[in-house]
Length: 427
Ligand SMILES: NC(=O)C1=CN([C@@H]2O[C@H](COP(=O)(O)OP(=O)(O)OC[C@H]3O[C@@H](n4cnc5c(N)ncnc54)[C@H](O)[C@@H]3O)[C@@H](O)[C@H]2O)C=CC1
Ligand SMILES: O=C(O)[C@H]1O[C@H](OP(=O)(O)OP(=O)(O)OC[C@H]2O[C@@H](n3ccc(=O)[nH]c3=O)[C@H](O)[C@@H]2O)[C@H](O)[C@@H](O)[C@@H]1O
Image 1 (cartoon, helix red, strand yellow):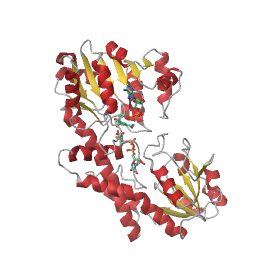
Image 2 (cartoon, rainbow, N blue to C red):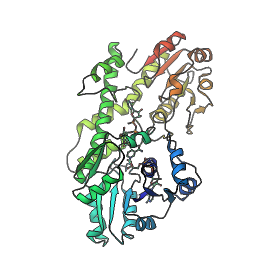
Image 3 (cartoon, rainbow, N blue to C red):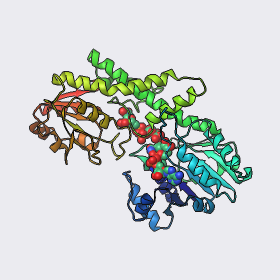
Image 4 (cartoon, protein in one colour):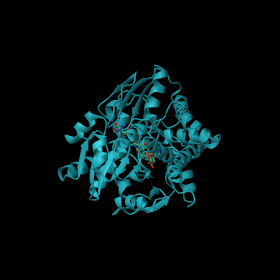
């Protein structure tokens, strides 16, 4: 099938590469001309394991094309997928400005019948609204079918997740549109769920909100472990063995970040509030996440006997999680800003990113960053940090505190090097 994907970001680009791998011909469009040029020169604007090789292969095989003309792409392809950003507006609601602009372009180009897939994460009711929008623009009803098909991939494992989805959600009551969308994914094993459009939109928000809830729950329980001298790793393992709860997504840390969990929780809250249904649980989930960082800065402060300009803290990690270059809502960055406010001497290292942050000196290696430090904080769980040479670290540091902000280190290896291990919900 010929597919036009609008938006060449984490989702659009990954989906384009995977659909090309499945045998389709994919035209991926972005309004960012520079990005399109880079893609056409073989430069992938994001870091996602396996993506570059797959994009190269399908560009060479004439199955994947990059361009910036939305209208031409709409005219040429039978299926159009919208994968543009849906960032937070100031009040926390989803800002649909990019979706609206794409719909506007689509409206002007619908000369024959198309299936339009909403891949972007959008609030409940957006499919209905998008349909009315196109009708008001004078597009005849029989020219399009608007289908919700939310995405559940994670950054860092995006290709793997797209090939191995737990489920593929198709939101439409139109049988033939559902079949067309399903046929795009032929070759991928994953449970197909065909449901209503608004239900599909809420499955996406509900999933991210539930994941965020799981994280704030375990992070709050980690604080209880701290005050009782218990180890959250053992507690989480014991809780997770109950199949009704499950072991995954129970890793306590300095809080969840990224471009989606924080934004989607806010957007769901805003969508519910707009219908006079305030969500108290998600309010609490957000509060726990917003204060989790402070809780562990306080813990560090206690261990170091204060945090001020006399203390040198090294931070390992800048991205919001490992295996990505994405810095959006990164807790590691927030941590650096918090410590900078306390005037600490700050050195930092990340394998992929070095965002400019006032007061932070970026170093070329993890070992260089700990030179002369009183403490090192693991803020992102990169493998490189997990397999750190702790003897070397100990010999370069002035002090001995290792705050494992992601609970990913081998505690024994750290302690054997004479360092003091401090974790999240672990003494
Ligand atoms: N990043 C992730 O891991 C996931 C994101 N999502 C959702 O997918 C959507 C896209 O997210 P990302 O890929 O992370 O965003 P992104 O910001 O990486 O990419 C969006 C792309 O759309 C382009 N764009 C914006 N307006 C355009 C227009 N009018 N015409 C053509 N191109 C346009 C931008 O230039 C940008 O390259 C969001 O709704 C997000 O919530 C869903 C699942 C996972
Ligand atoms: O809608 C989205 O964009 C995506 O959002 C998340 O994916 P992602 O943001 O890429 O990353 P996650 O692996 O979910 O991690 C989010 C944050 O939670 C933290 N985390 C994750 C898991 C865990 O056990 N503990 C923990 O602190 C991570 O470090 C990170 O800061 C969801 O997991 C995806 O299913 C969803 O498609």
